[in-house]
Image (cartoon, rainbow, N blue to C red; front, side, top):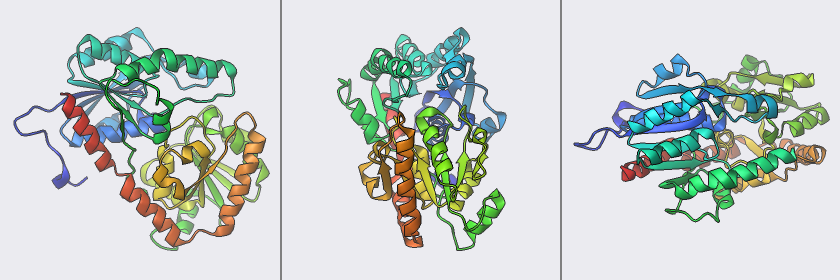
Amino acid sequence: MAPGLMHTPEAGGQPIRLLMLSHYFDERRGGIEQVAAALASELSLRGFRLTWCAAGASESQSQAANPECHRVPLAASNIAETLLQVPYPLLLPSAWCGIFKQAKVSDVVMAHDALYMTSLVGYLAARFYRRPFVAVQHVGVVPYQNRFLRGLMAAANRIAAVPVLRCADRVIFISELTMRHFARVRWRRPPTLIFNGVDTDIFSPVANGTDPRSARETLGLPFGVPVALFVGRFVEKKGLQVLERLARRCGDVFFAFAGEGALDPVNWGLPNVRVYRSLSGTGLAALYRASDLLLLPSVGEGLPLVVQEGLACGLTVICGADTARADSRAEAFIRGIAVDLENPDQTARRFSEEMTRAFAEHGSEVERARRFEFAKNNYSWRASAATYASILRSLC
């Protein structure tokens, strides 16, 4: 953002001290973490004195990139991810103390996704010190294949997440889908819907006809072959089992994967699969531009940031039917397919058929431009952050 557009604290007032909590920092490259990082940057520019607490180490380069945001790592065990392949850090006692310490010197506490321990402890700390508490809810329910995990998440939502959302001073949803999931909650105040933003200065369609070839050459992608892209964590709920079957079924399509996780596509041993582990920003945008479409056979999400980034880069997006309905304004630009993770073969067949139709249509530059304009006009971090800032200031 240009210096002339920076927001400062209200005249005569002190900067608001905001404690923000998420389960991990953005070095994990998950969607929630990326959203938290973007909000940290935007709210810092708007005069908030921000402290971000999350599990794991906070890289010094990230701290240097945004000196107005103080990052405080929380000690946690990753045993849940090791045993169950669920990214749920279990906070150690020192982390509890750290959150309470930061809440004491903050004016308002904001936590991402009420189900995580960081949010639960943050809520307790906010109530103990009588600080306003804001919950940003990203996810509804994840229909895991494992019956135990499904039951565990349903119970955790009912016992922990719903009470926190019900008692929060303000609740913000990032998609219509997630808001509908919690429609029966008796709110303290009516919730607010704020879609995440996307940086369209970075994520945009190719500038001219030579860029896709140049991007493919840089990234080591083949020419003359359609490229299907997946961006996200390599975990069950993202539909990795579906994508494996799809890659085996469609040998004439090259599949690019950007991310990391337990279900690593490298282990499939397929010649038409390539994994990129550390791409972000301009590097990730180049991978979008080098691809023909974005695949996301996931379940239990709101409107993933990668869908917004894919649209901004002009890509055809094929995703789960629920995800396609997360923003009713975007339905004309997204192809929704029924996803059944308990039947990955049938789901792979559906995605294969839709991919074939999409490749046959040879999306024009005009269509790419329309998707970009939609994303630019509807998913602005500047506008979203301004709404967050207004809500946070009203509580202080």
